[in-house]
Image (cartoon, rainbow, N blue to C red; front, side, top):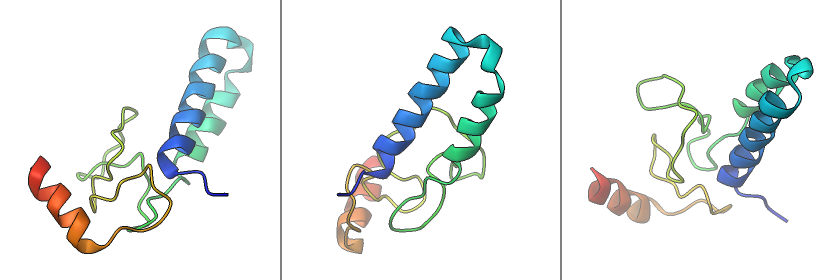
Amino acid sequence: MCIPAYLKYLSISIITLIVIFAYTQYWYLVFIFGFIDFFIKCPKCHKPVIETKNGGVSPLRWYICDQCGQNLLKCEVEPDEVTNKRINKTA
């Protein structure tokens, strides 16, 4: 069973927010979950989901990869024709 990259990212982010607001004495977990976010990668270009085109970090992500246009709600890699159409429509 495959869990899409976007759902992995969202679940780690929600857990991080819960730790911040509910369990303030476990602040070190925020850093651990934040570190885990960098290991969630796009299935097509293998760039971290949290990274933007400019190389910065954005905690608020959309379900489309900024680098290649892959739909992060899908586990399988989309063909280049599909992602190129998506990039051209959103740009």
